[in-house]
Image (cartoon, rainbow, N blue to C red; front, side, top):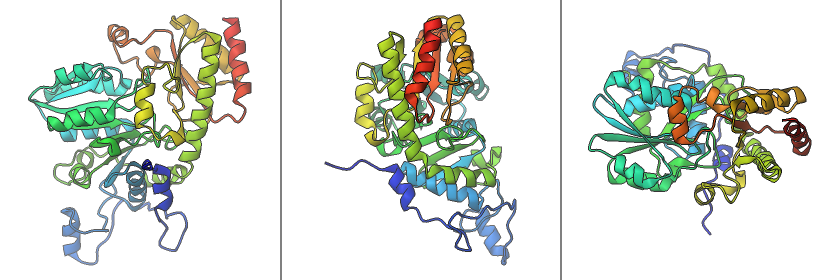
Amino acid sequence: MEKKFDPSLKIFELLQFGEYGDVNPSVCDSATFTFMQAKTMMDTFQGEAEGCFLYSRHWNPSNKYLADALAAMEGTESAWVTASGMAAITCSILQICSSGDHIICSLTTYGGTFAFLYNYVKKFNIEVSFVDITNLESVRKAIRSNTKMIYTESMTNPLLQISDIPALAKMAGEHHIKLVVDNTFTPMIVAPATLGAHVVVYSMTKFINGKNDCVAGAICASKEFIDSLSDVNSGTAMLLGPALDPLRSSGILKNMHTLHIRMKQHSKNAMYLAEKFKEYGIKIKYPGLQEDKGYDTLIRIMNPEFGFGGLIAIDLLTSEKAAKLMEMMEKEGVGYLAVSLGYFKTLFSNSGKSTSSEVPEEIQREMGLSEGLVRFSVGLDNDIESTWQKIKNCLDKL
């Protein structure tokens, strides 16, 4: 049996050390870099001087170390790091699409991405069709002669739908369209580039960094695409300037080496809670449950070693009931009523009133987002049984 692509092994095999033999690469806090010959500076401006650095908005050694580790993890030729996940998403979209182009996007997607594609790109005369990404026929029907991109998330936010990346990649290839996949929810679990995606984007704020102490993003793709992004004359990332601070790059790089351990524990705990919610009789959404609509697709594309992910969602039908449960859980010590995910403590929020609040209510209903949906980012609890007892105590009081 052919062994699946192992992202953790690729990171482990990457040899990176500082100029003095430091086991952790040194942090470079220079904004600009000197040259001994004027011609080398000119060549660097044109992207023709390998290993030379010009200005930290363009490249910085610390950012390059992190980018190389990300490319190794994703199985891409290159990567670029940004100051936020939204910077990674918007730069990728604007690098690919121009005025008059058309994008197909999953209707269920992160609120910030939805707002950018639903509201913001209109000023550039870029059209967007939102579709049920799990219905391949509806995706196919949405393709036009000017379609330049299919945009989706491996596991969609917040409904945890699973995108059939190989099928979408095949469709994109047949029509010379770029497939861009946000893999924020499923690092290591899914490797979209190895399944045919052209560009993979991340909010590294979440699982990759894992500490909620910084905001950062990443773009993983071919060398050609990353070079185009960082071109001094026409590169979207270079010209819009969402540069990540090198100190933050250094911290994220170190955290990546524990990502495989963390994803396994997040997944283990999420599966435990999902099964307990199911037993309790709460409507539960988790792709690791066999009855889930995305289960078969995820099984086919995932690296099973890392589990089904750390996100679960329950439906309490009303926002009032959701609010009451979340307030009780915070007081009980389950975790924090907070947005975001991938933290070592459990986080929970009412998606329709928080991370998906940019989506108009009628579209929330169209995508099947209940006003009582509570999304959990399950933490790294060592005693998840105790955590469940706290949650159950709160449910019993509803």
